[in-house]
Length: 638
Image (tube, rainbow, N blue to C red; front, side, top):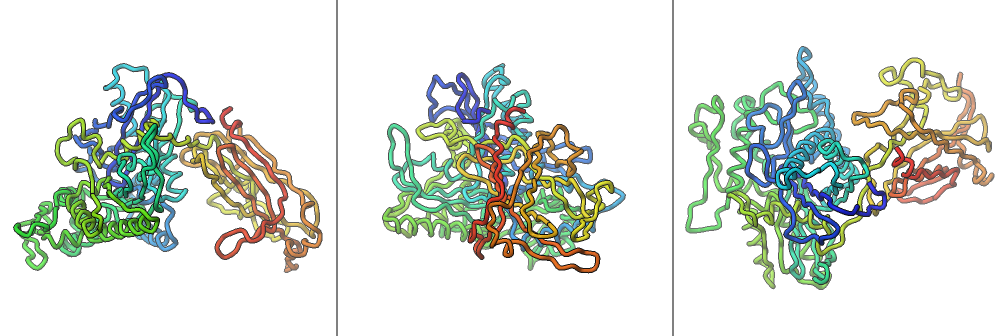
């Protein structure tokens, strides 16, 4: 990749991917610098195996030989992994403890005589990488089919990666790493210099489709509903917009409608014994969402009911009732008080409205707050534009239209074709594909400014430290006893803080902190050094923790001294540890290594005396002991 993001001359392939919680899509265009891109340029990928839809389910499964099946091929496959996108944001402490408890409970169900299910050995990043690698292979096939025998290996590729508007650094980084690795697998003949990567938020991509005066974009995805409001400030020569509200998000997407049915309504209606026939006793999910064949069958039938549910808005028609046929052997006898009859689960209109309730309430609250922000700024919203999978729901659409009618002046509600019927060529502009198509147009720079490229970090970065010795982590040869605190430690251990392929955004610095301890027999100015390690190994499953196991690492010494610390501050910074039994009296200085990752490279700053307040803001800047800059030029050389 060109580090400054400039586009190569000649033909190039621009691809936008919309990786969703429940469904994913992609769009692409082949363009040249000589011909300005246009809004009607490009194609939506629709060659998914097993479906005629414009999107493909975000699902994958593995068999005991690690063979993958994915997308719409999973009609009756065991152990389908889905909703992986929901695991990406950093969990709260409560969520992390819940996950741990669930993992321990799942582990107790493992049959030690059988192989461990492969999904238990894979991280969310690895699963998404495998999935997007399969998706990228279909994109490649689609390009070849539509463009003939084009020499695709010579064409530079610009990959546009969309993501929710309010996502933390961890979720954005994992999505970026998985997309980059997945597409590089499918286009393996391309060198790193032939790739350019750009990030676009899903609300921004959707907003590219509306040019009404002041409008609200509601992107109803699988995991979250994201909203943001814009005002169009110009139409010529380019469409220009500015935000008139803060982006907001709520975990009330379509997945939570499914969860309400699958995890609340279905178990309550069937009862523990009958529900166990669907879910099984022994299947272990780990921290992934995994469905057995019986649950997949019921879920597929519920999704059909959900997509076609319209509510009871017409007083002249009786409220609709839906029947979900249960698999053979489940609820063979009628249970009238639970609305189970003739082997089917009966869902009344009221049942469906309650199943939708969390999603609808969350979405309407988001819109209500957006309208308030817009009006507080002196504007009037004219249009609500719906996109994403939820926009296909007639009930979702009608509820928002009814809500919008309560405001004066009245607010219009727009969406594209539902995508439930056969699509025509014009339907590529439908609401369901708005993210992929809008992201593609932004990547092409059609009537807008193309976002600056993001970079994958070209190397791993770690630091050689001594950590407490553990038999399961360290070889016996690395064990030693610290002469000061008498703790057994492992020497030459590497603490990795940045991984090769990590997201380096164009407009933000990624900050990390590393706590270090310097021990001495008494406060002194004796200098020291920290060893930084750069590695270019392509290790997707993790790097070794020992220096001698790396192949051709680069060593960078960060030399430091204490000359910047005023002598009258020594007694405050050095903590005296009294003698106790075999432990000698000594002094401890706590230091902080700040690691800043930006487009230029990596800045290392070693500090002591830096303090933060209760809100996490810097209260005392401390004293700089050493600084070192590692430019990315070193990484591109490899």
